[in-house]
Image 1 (cartoon, helix red, strand yellow):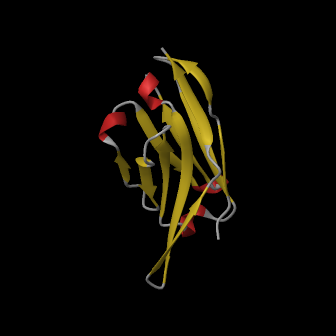
Image 2 (image 1 turned 90 degrees about the horizontal axis):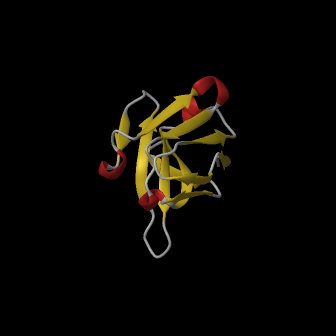
Image 3 (image 1 turned 30 degrees about the vertical axis):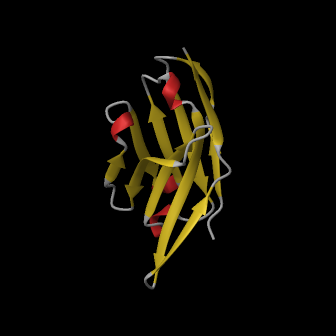
Length: 119
């Protein structure tokens, strides 16, 4: 199991920026994919971005060009830089780690961090 601790959420005005961080309890090089998901009230959890252990990234269309995911293997941390924030980005953001061990996938989640964007 991987423990994940998110930080960096908060309240920001539209057009502002926030940087989320996710600290993992184990070497993230051993984690196949790390990602950020978000869940707004009354909506399903959705993928925001993820990054593989070879550095490949994927973004939701709604955040392309505004958000950047990165990983710091030396600090076992993944970051999500969020720029040009919009009120519709308001949600609880969750860090996720996926490991594949002998063909079996294991998924772990952080506790979430609230991001609120005011108009």
